[in-house]
Image (tube, rainbow, N blue to C red; front, side, top):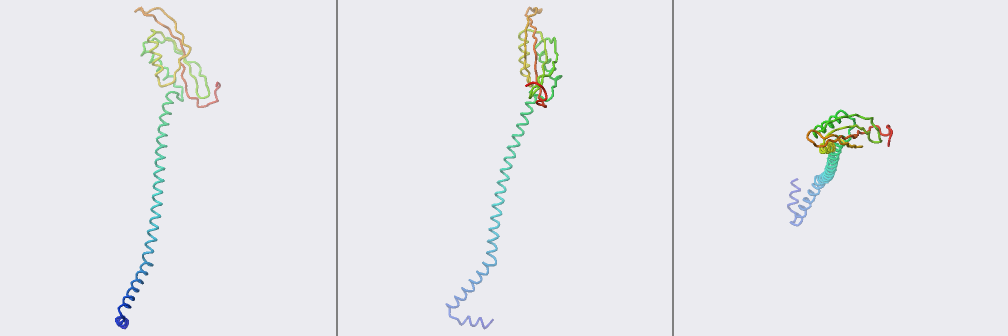
Amino acid sequence: MNDLLQKLMRLKTPVKIAATAGVIVMIVAVYYMLFYMDLQDQIKGGEVQQRSLIAEKENYEKRKKEYLAYRNELTQLQQEQRELLKALPKRAEIPTFLSSIQEQAELAGLEVLNLAIEAEAPAELYVRIPVRIEIRGSYHTITKFFKNVADLPRIVNVENLALSLEKADETGSPRLRAKFYAVTFRYNDQPGAGGGT
């Protein structure tokens, strides 16, 4: 080793510089081959993985937005279904319906003379449930009753209304007798099974 150093010391300065530059180039080349290329491959692999994770995250965020939109739509549809089932319930619920009719008549100040349930008439999507009603009261109380019935959450049609004049009451105001059908409906869960159109 000493011989090599002595030989190097005897060389001229430009040769020393060239030898030193050659050694430096060789060290840099070895470093580049062993370490830098490996690090560069790792960096490229990391960048590819980062792009993949970013794309996956964007995909998840998109799916999350779609899920939230579907969930909101489902909640809205369920709320609409609850509202529709109030208007057109799946079961007849006649006692509840008669109770609400009776309550509206009492609130209006009417006398209920007759309340009779008629036979159901199935149609394609609904079943028609007529209730024959006869009430007595003043014109204003009868109109108030019809307004209250119209405000019920359940669908109610008033059909075949017949009014007749009766004797005046003790206050002298004329009294009317109203005969009509209060027709309500329920959802027909077996479409086509019943007759009718």
